[in-house]
Amino acid sequence: MQVKDLTIEELKLLIQETVAETIQSLLIDPDEGKKLKPEVKQQLLDSLQRTQAEEGGVPAKEIRVLA
Image (tube, rainbow, N blue to C red; front, side):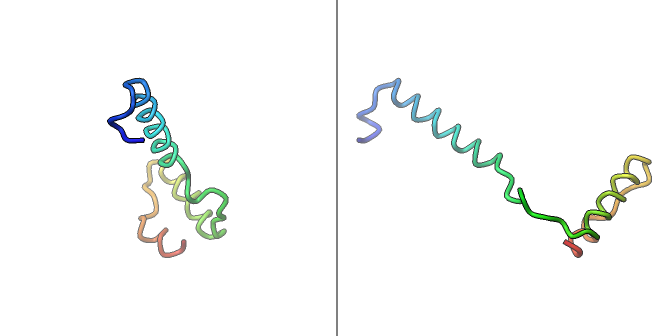
């Protein structure tokens, strides 16, 4: 079947399904289920505490090296 053969309702449904699939694929977390190294987790927690205390966080460059 070609697009030119679809009714307006069929085309709308096809577009809706395509948009829903695209949105769903963007919302999937590729890191789900993976574990952080303990030292990375601790650095992130320390960074969060400093940020909440308005002291600044750990630069992303430092976090990336340990990941």
